[in-house]
Length: 506
Image (tube, rainbow, N blue to C red; front, side, top):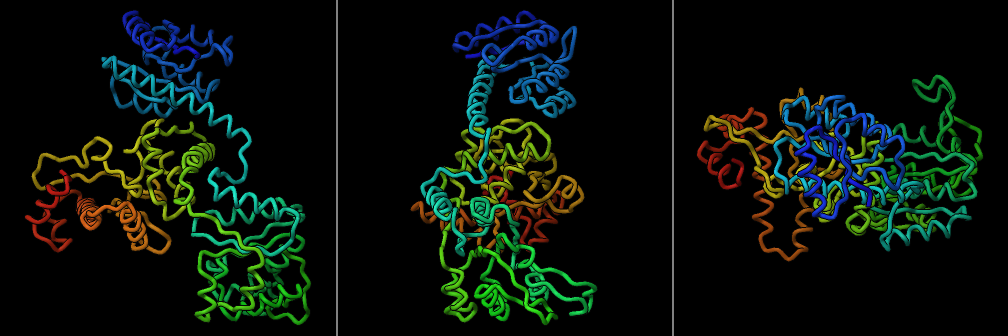
């Protein structure tokens, strides 16, 4: 194992850490100033380089923060723990902005310091393995049997131009599958064109699909090619096909039959050579029975059906996907990738993910920006995951001196920037995982998950969560004033005080 590098001008600190780490069978190498560290790094290699760097922040001959910056330039994935006797905000902020793994104020408790270093070692070893796996990241990830079935199907279809129907819940990655089918098909050199038929107004969808001639309608100043023409020689992905208006389904059936269509306002048939891949989260058989979807179009599209599993059906993939999205988020934002603890991964593994892979990706974006340290713990996860500060060993809300003031937790939600929420009168707090169709479906998903565990306190659990979030949201809107919050909620002062105590919101 590579050594732990300790940098401190205080001999007693170096001695104490060396002996403590030696008892843990962790090799060390000590330095008295940053210059010697940088010199050693020049000749270091993968075998004798540092596993962890533990550095003081203020030393003769150089600053620990300057050392942090230079070390990160050479070893971006190396965990660095910054120690200082000057426990001020500027030092802490500067350390974390520079990519420090953790900030350790002096004097420190030796067992806790050793525990922190041990955790940093474990994280660095895990990240080394993860980086090796992600050197050549494929377009899709998944080790679960259900995902392996999808990969096998894509492989079997790789030399085919057959029409494919992809089914799966919202956010499960249907477009990724469509892109993979295109990439591994004979049409890979042609265009891949995607359109969400549910996201475009009915009166514009026809023009989007088939194009229009100049003067076909008000505002049509010139001829426009539609998606079918744009995808000629390639693949057209029709997402949420179940929401397509009924009258347009007839036109779609015609072009799928013979490859001919007319632009809006046009009189000459246009010929196109397009492979169609459709996707939906709806039950198309039921839509056919309800008269909302043409049966002949359904059979035309449903030549080969691929069902994409929900994330809750492939929970063994959550750790791999989480680390992938954390790497991806850090790259997009130009910051050091965050690491995630086993405890936080366990919380994510037990979460129902009604928003599927897209929701996990959003959570990773959120923690990349908002997690206060380089290692993500359960308490750092967003409210929608259901981790309360009580669950993760802290307090749920800070009490101010006034009896009638409670400061709600200033948590930010995925999808809201810090600037957005700095000017917002209310801090958004999630009651339960939200879905595209509203919080009621999120509540339903949570209820289903709890009922499946065999628990007999589902009513009490969900009621407690509902009341807690409702009260905290009202307190956020009134800046912690209980009486005003109670008035806005339509309950009495005694009631809100009692609820705050019962729900542990003090």
